[in-house]
Length: 96
Length: 374
Image (cartoon, rainbow over all chains, first blue to last red; front, side, top):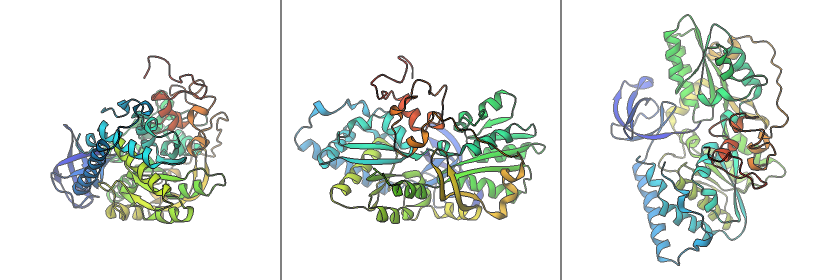
């Protein structure tokens, strides 16, 4: 029930408690209440839960997280190869 | 999808899993609190990427699962009234009550409707002034701002035919209760990222300190979850126990101030009974007195409710991380998603449903899932 999906704000209408917006989820667009993210502008990404944006995605923080992960991957490549016999199928990460 | 696909990259997943393997020197047990996290872990097979000594146990973070039986029975009684349009998130419809569930009420002619958002229920109230529209306000802190907004708007619009049946629960008091039990075996927690997007994580700091457990605010994608696990075992291996935010793209320490203001206006903290777990002090929300006119529990007198919990369902132990779904003798035999004994087999966030859908074997080694299904 705590599922929240990131989407891009493409239109904003109204203000205060009635601030609503159109949010694009990879081509599927839905109305969402933007009252709780007053700082959000068109083009920002938000996390939407049951029709409400509960958080603006912080692009800088996302970038830093991904950069740290990339670095971890590069370091792993430099190190000894992992013991693949102990590693389950990489299918662990499907992209559905 | 942006902000999703990047966190499912197989190479990066393998790199973080390798780092976890390098970090862990002794057995540790972590609990992921949210049922959505449990489903991601099983769906993506993350549990199988972890080193043998690192166990993940599944937490109570499934609002549908912990909604007390008495509340389900009350919902059934209200939804059965001919003057009512009963609105609910879809997950609640198949949760077994003492005698029946909301889906059977609907099949029997009751006007039970699945809504995507509480604002949909509000719209139904505007469109049907001659009917009484009741919204089943279930959820954790993540959902509270949405449900609070529906209440606030209904009050401002003077919608007399709208009410809410509130069964809101709160995460930190439940963690406090879990960690205070005598035989606790949880050494670190992956805190629910979307709850924390609303509330922030200040309330988790005294819990981490009091119980000496690292608490890592964690997202829902495979890399988020592995990063959370890595942060937790890194703390454990170095003897630390603090709150760490590994979901900074969505969560700040203070949470969402506008959402918290709305919650404060509409709800008050109250004691709450958790299905399978029992009463936990100050672990839920109830409508603030000024909104009591909108409280469906007061609007509809459905008489005394006598609950009848099936004895064979062990969901309480599952919700506390004391029993793996696959260790339950009824799992996959008498209890399946088609014929659930309890809510943990119904909800898309229930641990039993996750084990079943993603083919985790029963403890005796046989598959719970029929061949060729799912």
